[in-house]
Amino acid sequence: MARCFSFTASRDWFYRYSFGNAGLRSISSDFGDGTTMHCWVPRTYKISKPNLVLVHGFGANAMWQYGEHLRHFIDRFNVYVPDLLFFGESYTSRPERHESFQAQCLMRLMESQGVHRMSLVGVSYGGFVSYSLAAQFPDAVERIVLCCAGVCLEEKDMEDGLFKVPNLDEAANILLPQTPEKLRELMRFSFVKPARGVPSCFLADYIDVMCTDYVEEKRELIHSILVGRKLSNLPKITQPALIIWGAEDQIFPVELGYRLQRHVGESAKLVIIKNAGHAVNLEKAKEFAKHLKSFLVGSFQSPSPSSTHYHLFHQDHVD
Image 1 (cartoon, rainbow, N blue to C red):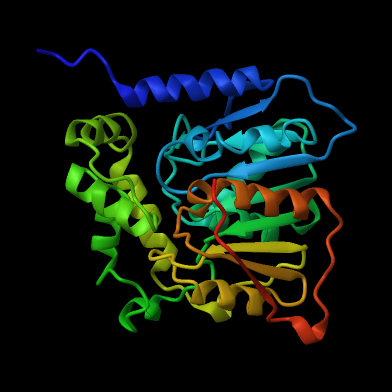
Image 2: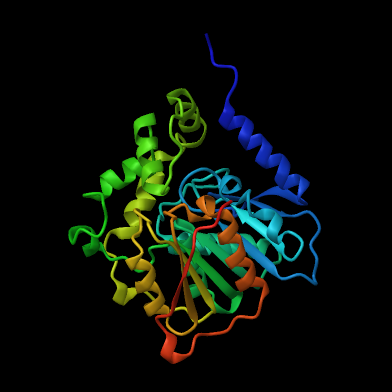
């Protein structure tokens, strides 16, 4: 008998409804070069509000990663939630796969909406893209939040055993799960306390709806992150930066958070959240939102030179 109900598709519909109910509308911009980008944009733009762009990482589309946080910012900002290339409804026929190209396309998307100044929040791969955008277009970015984004990793880190996977192919197999077993493995890597006892049929449904499009293109994105990467080639950004990391991140170890804070320097503040893994934005949603609001809404105070390596440990809260 054919399957007639999809929990994942229903959840996706719910997010789509909630984004629309929050005052956003869905648009697609065709750049005319084989590239189309989808984005949730304000139904009514308020010139008195600053602009905030929420950039997703690998996984489901942007709605799934920011659905729990939208309500914290929708009243204070003109909020934009794009789908990066090969995610959601965004696509390119061009061959470029590096995060710098993703950043250029994201900037074109924002400019097509009349947005020339913004703050950025980038989760994981979205942090790579956000960092690149801030480096390439410094006048366009006011503040930036980088969450569990291993921007400062190097190719030799894989050889040196920094990661729990032996090679890029295995990393891609986990980040792009095609079987319930691989999805369970991804959940174990991403959460300190992953959901247990989830039926395989639910996992298979999620894979069918969310993980089967543009698999090879996404593999190429993963390879482009690491191959040939050297910290010495990474430009420094100068915007006020908040770096958030899960203390028990198994995908991008917390060492990379310290490395990134040192690389950016005095304009960066590092917050480490205890009892959280790579999916800290989902696992500790309240703490994550609290730090974002404090940084994006409150006045940013740059650390003094003597506290360049300052970091905060936050106790676990009962949600």
